[in-house]
Amino acid sequence: MVDVSLGLAFIAGLLSFISPCVLPLVPAYIGYMGGRMTRTVALQTIGGDKVRADEQGLARANMLLHGLSFVSGFTVIFVFIGLATTAFVSVLGSATSIATDIIARLGGLLIIVFGLHFMGVLPKLFMALRARPAVLASPLFTLVVAVIVAALLLWGFVDPTFALPALAAFGLWLVMGGAFSKPNFWPSVLDQIESVFYGDTRPSVQVSGREGLGGSFLMGVVFSAGWTPCIGPIYGAVLTLAANTGDVGRAAPLLAAYSLGLGVPFIITALLLDRAQGVLRRLQRHMHKVELVSGGLLILIGVLVASGQLTRITQTLGNNFADFSFRVEACGVGFFKGEIAFNQIGSCMGGTLTPIALNQGAGGTLNAQTTRLEYVFYLEDAQVVAVELRNAPAGFAPELTLLNAQGEVIADSGTPTLIDGRGLALENLALDQGRQYRLLISQPSESPEASFRVRIIPQPSR
Image 1 (cartoon, one colour):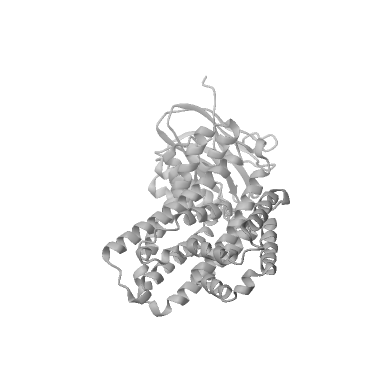
Image 2: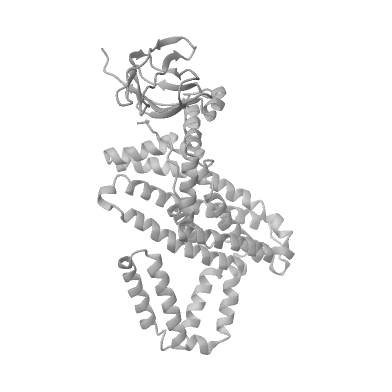
């Protein structure tokens, strides 16, 4: 397993931002943060108010706070899911999957509500309802609302068993609150909802936008629950640590560091979005159209999250671009660790060079177009190692050559003996510490295509 430090986990998370399976999170995040920013700018420009420089600075700081809140929510669920699906899998079983489904479904509905909020649909709806007090006071209206909410709760909680407490609490609230008997019940509820969504319309908050940090945290929770991360060498090593050793005390900080590294680009994106506020202020005449677009994007994202399509998209991208995602992390971490040089990054990303560590496996495919693959590894301590081949096809007869960083041959092999596609190709290699080594694996172009895995394993010194 890769020896993972907090710094390496952070760097791996940072590099993972450009992997394909993270791609669906970016428009989702921009949709939410952009909608929030558009709403703030729209409030600032009501009546032609000019925004002072100190208020602009405060608004920029609060945009950063919203980004941090999003990343915090993202991190909490990311760490929980990572640990729950590995170290605690025997205890929790499928409960983790159900929990994430519940968060995604209910959270997706909440995102849709936020989209309607940013579009300005909710105040118009509330105004229309207030214009019909007889409707609000009717028991039939309460019954219709109760049926709709009950249906959403049953669907949102996946299993009726989990929905029963929520249904009971909702029913008790309706009865005890006087929904069927008090004429002012629903107007009061509308007032409370408006105070949550539109409390920032006060002049003292028009520029600062300090409200809603809890909403940004919650959005991070929802997006994380509806997302499937790519499994790279570092992230995979941390999950293996949690699963094989149960060392949650060590795995949790590593997962948190990985998640925070992944969150840095999101925070930078929030600051870049802040720069667009000036452009939006110059588009005051079209501000409502901008609000409609940003809110519509958020509604679309909410539908994708609630229906589970966002998870399916990330899984599909992760599977289709698994090799690319792996190489982004492996090559980047290999460079930061000094395992590969700057001029080797292109070969690494191109698939002809792969950094691996002691006890770490890596895949490879040789065919008529790719007749040679190169692996590099770095030993911090002096080791006696062997090169092991696994999952190789019948008749696979490669040539293996081990070189030092200067290109000098240290060892080479004839045709290795493989039993059921597995065997040692090079053995008892006494290597010095603090050195980089290159392993070349090749076969003639006329040989059939062969996919395999290679691993550098320690051996007892003799």
